[in-house]
Image (tube, rainbow, N blue to C red; front, top):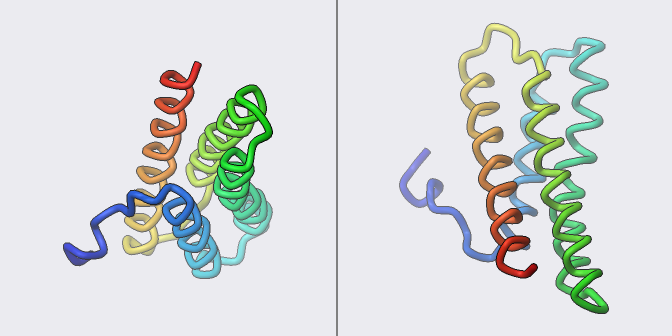
Length: 121
């Protein structure tokens, strides 16, 4: 990863979108096992839901709605991390490394949404 690629966008909508796109690229490269196909589907859903719920939070009708959507974004990031942990990358070290990067990003997103919750409550 180059220095430019390593920089995380400050725009959380873009960052969550980039995470969901990276997950989709990762899933397409996985060995085609029954477990990976099922876990990959779940991972794609949860990773996309992180950003979708954040967008909904930005359009919230009130503080209660905002907090609920941020909680859901945090939950979906946590769920994405779970599915990533179950994925079998085979013997390819490159895929293992990509999975580790995605797990770190899911964890960072979880932490960001957790901080938003703490500061907004």
